[in-house]
Structure formats: C-alpha cells, structure tokens
Amino acid sequence: MYLDDFVKKYDGKKVDFDGVFGPQCVDLFRQYCKECLGIKEHTGRCGTTGGAKDLYVDYPKMPLEEKYFYRCSDGNYIAGDVAVWDSNSSNKYGHVAIVIGKLNDNLIVFEQDGFKLNGAKISLRSMKNLLGVLRKR
Image 1: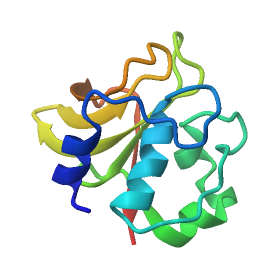
Image 2: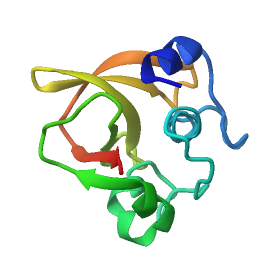
Image 3: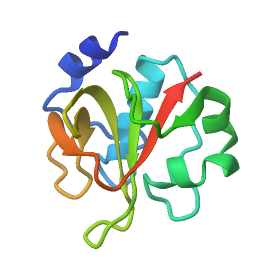
Image 4: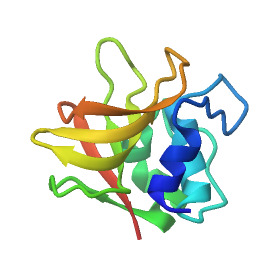
C-alpha cells in the first residue's frame, strides 16, 4: 500500500494496532509499518519509558527498528519518513508521526493523538523538539 492510500484509508479513524491503551501515535506507526512498509513484526512496547520518543532515543537497543530503519536528523525529510519528537512538559512520552511533506520549518504529518483519542488526521507540526526521523532501509 502507498502512503496516500494509507492516509485515505485511516483519515478520521481510530487505529489501535495492539489493542492496549486505545488509539495512540505508536499504533498508527505500527499499522503504517505493516501495511505500507511490509514490516510484519514489531517490538510491541517502546524501549525504556514505553513512549514514542524511545523509537529514536533507544534505537540502538531496539533490534527490529535497527533492522528496518536508520536514523536521520539532517533536516532533509521526505514523505514516508517516521518523525519522532522528544518529551516535553505536557507529554512525557514524546510523539511519532508519518511525514507527508515539509512546509517551511514545519512538517506535514499523518498522526494520531494518544491523549485526545480522536483518530488519525493530517496536521502541520513544528519541528521544535524533533529528535529526527526513522527512514526505511
């Protein structure tokens, strides 16, 4: 499946890949991995804290992420990359979203909010606090 098809299929829908804690950002990432990137296996819980940021921070400790992705932080992000944000004062888990494009200093992403639980949507997100992206090998 192509990224455009994935967005059309899940836009406005709640994706709960693992059936735990409701629809979260990592659930949308895992569904994307399975349907668009052909990655059927996954680590389940994110690394040390259990948060999305661990996909980037704990990358060296996550053999499946190392097997399928490499980390980039050069700013040359492309559609299909998986953007990972660090934690902040209102979200200790960080965030993960699928890059659709770039607009100035922002990323156009397909994401799901685990706090609002309102389903997947296209958003404009600041690159402030962005750790980098995971790009499929």
